[in-house]
Length: 262
Image (cartoon, rainbow, N blue to C red):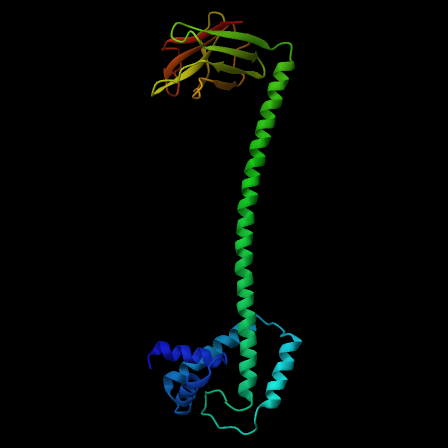
């Protein structure tokens, strides 16, 4: 018999789950005081005892009734067993029933814990996703509220931008408030070439143009750009859009595609 086979028999015997020839084979080893069989049996008995101590659980009344019925039906008379082995007389059914009950209870508990952890992890992921969605909605609501505030303020400038020679069909509208910033909405712009992007500029008096942001257009040539307040810039005289290297430049260097005066 291989060590694995012996270990399986010892585990089944400790739980009272061996029947027929398998039980007879293992009991023959125990009666013969086989060292490996006795060692394996003690190990499983000790493991069951530890598990019982760590996870105490009162069996239901139906189990107790079944146990008493089995004890009452067990024939009297016993065969003596060597030291270190479990008895195969009347105590044996008691141990088998309780170990089976314990094993079942532990298996159910472990399964419940595993299911609980799985459900908990799933709900945690869902809650995290809902939290992200809520944060995005809050950001969107704040953005819309700020735009409504700009539209309602009499100090807001409305500037129309028209297409230039490089994009004559392009057009745009710029809402601008010196303290709240603004919004650019454009249409009819061709997609920027690879490595290029559109850049919005605010020009006030004789000061150098101030970058107000970089943007791209969709497949229909439409785009929008939320512009924050620009430090040191009050009323803007001219808004312009140029085609620049991706990421933008500190000063205009490319062709002008849109321009509008306030």
